Image: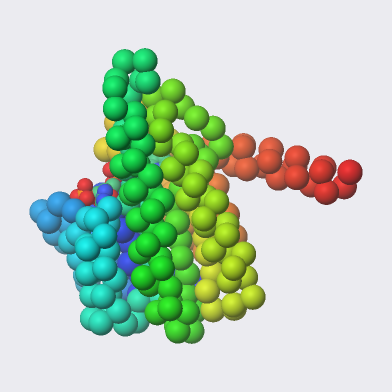
Length: 242
Ligand SMILES: NC(=O)c1ccc[n+]([C@@H]2O[C@H](COP(=O)([O-])OP(=O)(O)OC[C@H]3O[C@@H](n4cnc5c(N)ncnc54)[C@H](OP(=O)(O)O)[C@@H]3O)[C@@H](O)[C@H]2O)c1
């Protein structure tokens, strides 16, 4: 799809990967609307972007999702791309920390249920646009579990499953495309507790996303994730030939 002239909402666009995506897409000539919970961080990020709009809110809370979706549809009806990037993860060891159940519920809520709900709230609006897209930010964790993130991977695997189903549902509909970008370890606040300093720069994820959007590459593995995606691709093609 074209990567200029769009109006793009980016959840969690005030830091890390979301802010890197916001900067690249803003530089490419798109109108950007960023979101985050912390007002000061959001306003600071807004100053780093050209003519960006900021909508504060917590997408893990149902009433905030409804308010933000209404504000987008009413005040920024040109919005034609949503990037579901805001995510939640707990770094802990199952052997040392209690409360895995509560942590898993929070991760599932933010990374899966909230995205399904927000997308549903925006879907008919997106389908009315000439060209629209949903971009979900999942993770290398879709492909395997890390002992320091014992309950996070399942939430991203669930998001992957939903994203694939959404894409298949609308594949005949020429004006709605569904993308999934799979970052590996990225150097952000989010990953600090699991050695994120050794990860790639958030701007690399943004660069790969833009290449994927331009090439209509709906699954966009980034960096190390490509190793897993390629291995699965090869296995699938062998199965198809068998
Ligand atoms: N970093 C990695 O290694 C890595 C790897 C694979 C996938 N990912 C995925 O990439 C996405 C972004 O991660 P990141 O590393 O860029 O994180 P980050 O640097 O911590 O940034 C997260 C952004 O999301 C916002 N946010 C968090 N929870 C939110 C909520 N409930 N509602 C609205 N905004 C919220 C944050 O602002 P506020 O705190 O002010 O709300 C911030 O703008 C996540 O979905 C994560 O799972 C990250």
